[in-house]
Length: 266
Image 1: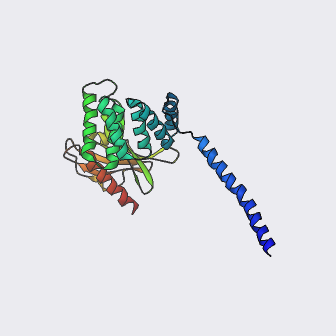
Image 2: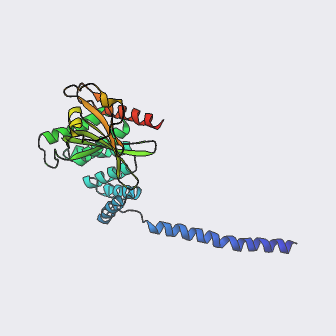
């Protein structure tokens, strides 16, 4: 019996040893796959490629290594912040983008990203301050920024559907939209959009036969300077809210829209 017991243990040892060896080899191979970044120019190039591929964790690691070796590199600082934004590490991204604009006050992309971050964090005073920086730059004709371009300023998810918010510094289209809230299909097609626009311009943009859904079709005549929050889809259009005293703050429009979207789901 003792000989049999000893034989069993020896056999078990012979079975386990190859498994341990295989595990060690696998760990070694994994370590070889992604060598530790060294902070070289090659790492900076690789970081840009990883960021473009949306491999945000690896991109951040490579940018951090380069920044450690080259602390004066604004490109690396921006890259770290961009990767953190992709990882939804909003507070870290805010800190790093602010380090960028401290050195490059006219880095408009960094300012635009800060607008998005402040919206995600719900810091509306900071959100408006960053938008004011961009507005002043456009009004003063600063280089590198145009009054004709639009900015993505916010995004949110309601009932599993993602909405992207775009602001137009110069109102756009026949309805003179100031903001567009767009909902996209998984294939990337815009399925529905909601716009804040002057009521008069929105009404003038309607075509004969357009279907209006909701009680606002027979609303009282609008006041001069009134704005409306209107929704549009393939089924028709309707009005969510009216602002007779003029253009409301973005925060108020967002609150009204979210309340309406949540109500639609009930």
